[in-house]
Image 1 (cartoon, rainbow, N blue to C red):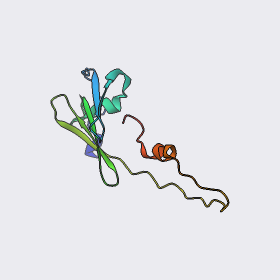
Image 2 (cartoon, one colour):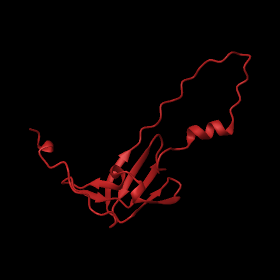
Image 3 (cartoon, rainbow, N blue to C red):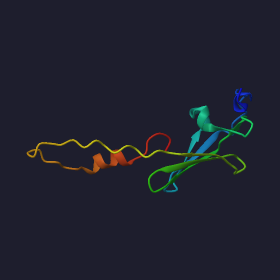
Image 4 (tube, rainbow, N blue to C red):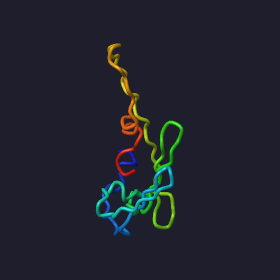
Length: 117
């Protein structure tokens, strides 16, 4: 059996401090109660697999994607993830008689991140 599958995969969850602060790429922070956040987001695995409470999640914007960094109560970096950029929208050819008007609202819908940020 592979060594990574021999370790214990289920650990009791420790008590969470109660809130998680989400910081967007623009620096705006928002605090959420931990009871409303799923376990996979409010806990990060330690080297041995034990869960460590996450109290801060920071989203950093890159050129083509973003990185997500989770921090513990002591300020230690616990987990780093990368987001995949969205696939380009399929271009459909419209009849020449149909005017194509790009509205600010339609551009905003595709530009805003969804989920916790």
